[in-house]
Image (cartoon, rainbow, N blue to C red; front, side, top):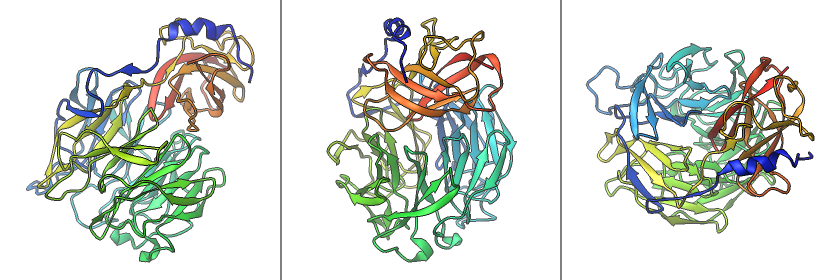
Length: 500
């Protein structure tokens, strides 16, 4: 697509974005405010406002209460370092999923309503609900087809949410437009017995497909060479087998699976027979194979893995044992190696949540510490460089109101008097994308995801990004339709355009 050379020149003077040097020592953790209650197996979701929604979880392991599972939720404000209560969920739940939808609401699905050692129905939930940041309230939405917990939830490029794995035999799709779940095609391989759990990690690939790695081998028998993995294709609504992992089993705990900026997926950690795995491997969607990469500095299971804006991956926390793990480490895709970074402040933290913040720091909340104490503590990881969240340009220069968004190939701004139409291609200008990354941003227009046709540096302009999108159908027409870009899970500011 041709780029207008008039508008970018005006915008560059107002950009003022880029990396920001840290005042703290790089690679270190620091304490932030405490949550209002201890939590593990909760969710923590970055909202468009920059605050973090922390919801549900378990607050006590050896509890005299009838039910220590939480329905409460709270918000973390990075500007103050404080947690404050928000509305309660409609039901207590732990080991659920939370997915930020294109319209800014959060889908909460499944989980466990009570503290039992058993898995599957009736110990899992089929219910789902939506959190609205504008009201601070949760409201029920359609129920899932099957009750499940420990599942994966992936926002697809269509705006629908794939719910896969967990204690249920099939996958399903949530459609925010209707508030309903519908069945997908069947898995290409059935995980092992439902009563022993069949958790999975799911990762959205750069081409829109989803990689699923199971916790356990199929039917309880290791697949040749490792654990079976499969791909979900939203276009055909089918699951197909792909390569098997090098690790023979993950039945004592899941690995993490992180899409790297080169398009490969880092699968790291997990456990088999109480053996904490130090190995890691890379999945290549072009060949459908897993290959070994460098070993971690220590074993990790029930840990977190966070893709940082510089392309490295932060792994932190692990399952409990007496000597404990306060260690964290960084994987560098360029070298294929792991290197230790600063220790976490809270030792033996696992089953915590990790959230990449708008300023590039990582928030860690809750988890379990030895000897089996659930914590309300939270801490912040400080990377070597702080890369801010993406920013959309506006004509006013303050990131608000009329967006610097053009009809493709022209110098005409998409305004109320010159609106975009469904199916038309638009040029959007921003900062915050990573050079050379194959991971596409997500662009929501009027709360609906747009098809991405091109993303990268605007030709001829250093530090200016251009994203070409197609206006989605179903957008409510108006003079001030909101547009927001999300990259690496961090939403930008919202600007507006006219849509006919």
